[in-house]
Every structure is written in structure tokens, then in C-alpha cells.
Length: 349
Image (cartoon, rainbow, N blue to C red; front, top):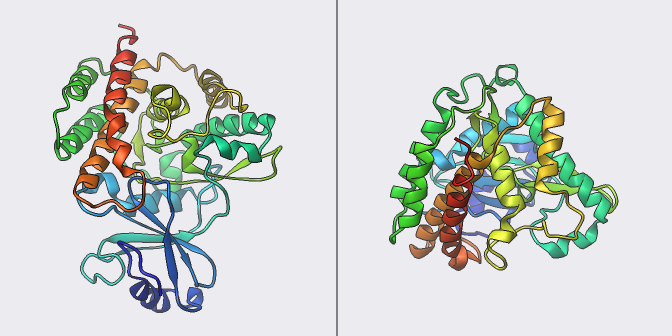
């Protein structure tokens, strides 16, 4: 059996045999699925069918930002909806038993597909196919926001009243817990976000919290790729859907902010992807709502990602990261703060 950091394969095999005997078929092996910089994701082979296990990151974390039980709950709730999600199997709090991860973890079925995070991956698809894929991504986001939380058992999944204020407070705590160096520009952005906060959308929806191209699996032929599954729901809650549009815009244009090798994005000029403005139009048409000024939401997206990356930078300095590429993560924090302040200058009074 192969062990990887943060996961005991022998313990996982024992748990699977005991809790889900129909899935237990032999010795298990695990490998870290690269790409994620927050909750750890492992592919599990050797069971009756391929599985995926998710657990919080190693070391210094803010528990509310890495709650895999909430992630499992929202994915399970969306099963059968217009939003494609992986089939879930179980969620376990292994903190006391320390048999598998020593943390809460959840297991789901593996969905076949590719994560598009680099420009060279676009070669597998036609330009028209990538254009349609981008539009489908905006449609799926609109479909997510159209799901009535009470209809899928998520009435108490969050507190929409005061959502933006709580978001600012949460990420301020996360930043304070991650400080390893002076961050004057990020502190300035944080203060300005608080003083310019909008009233918020009058629409309450399920907010993914990190909605972007490289958080979905893409499958299908070159001329007709499709979103096979939406992943990474660890930040999901109930709140202002425009936060998701701000995040999508940030990642859609992130290569203009900081190029290789710091940023990961397959969205590059000439590949065929639609512009972000077109995505907003598609989203607006799908929701039958006019979308107003997104400047504050774009600024908040930059701030949120900067705080996330500063937390990852803190874990990297402590030796608590798994995989490659973490040494450059901290380099993107200042450009993100600059980007956020630039967007705030465009906020309409």
C-alpha cells in the first residue's frame, strides 16, 4: 500500500472494508491530485471503482475555510440538479480515531475529465468548442444561483443577511492568522472594501465561492467539450451570487495580472474562449436579470484570493504544503492587492 502525506492507505482500506464493504476490492493506493492549493485531494485506486478523497490541508488553517463536511453536504444536495457534481459516498470525522487522515474527510466517486489550467491543454479542443465551453460555464453558474436552497435541503446552509460584512470579517481573520510579513497594500485594500461595500444583491443563492474554469472537469470530443463536474465546494454558502461572478472574472483574466509561472489559467487570447463581458451577458440572459456594476465584486475577488495565497505562503514557510509550485505563490499577493485597488477606483458612488 502506498502512503502519501496526510493519508494512511492501510487505515483507509480498513475503514472502507468496514463502512462500505461493496467498494472494498483489494489493497488501495493513493496519489495527490495536483492543482488544488487548499483542501487536499487524492485519487484512490484499488477499490471496486476509482474514488476521490478530500481532507483539509496540513498545518496552519482556518477551520471555517476548510470545512469538508460542508463541502460534502452541498455536493450531495446538488445531486440531480442542473449543476453537474460528483456522486458522494460518505463523510467522516476522523479526528479522534486518527485512522485515515486524523481530520474530517469525505469520499466521492471519480468523475472522468480534464482540468484545463494551462494554455497547452487547449490544443485538445477546437476554438469553437472552447468558446461554447466558456458560455456553458456561465450558464452553469446561473443554474447554480437559480437553485432554491430550501428545495435541496440547504435552507440553513448559511445566513444571507449581512453576508458581505461577514465575508469581510472572515477574510480579515484569515489574513491576521496568516501574517508572516508586512502587507500594507493588502491592508489598505481591506479597509477600502469595508468603506465602499455595496448593499448587496437582492437575490440570495448558493454561492460556490471559487467558481472558475480550473475548478471543473471537462470531457467530450474536441468540437463539443462540456463541463462534466463542478469541483472544490469548500467555500460554498448562501449569499450574494455576484461574488461568484467577481471570482469568475478574476480568474478569467488572471494571466493579464501575473503571467507564468505564478498564475494558472488556460484562458488566453486566440484560444477561442469568450470574453468575460460575454460571460456576464450569458449569465444575465440565463437568469433574466440585469447585472450592474461589478467593480466592488472584482476588487473583493482579488482581496479574497490574495488572503488565500498568503495563507498558503504561510503554510509553505512552515513546511506544511504537499506538491510543487508553492514557492511562488506568495509572489502574487501584491499584484492582487494592486488589482483590487484598481477595481475599487471604478466603483460607482
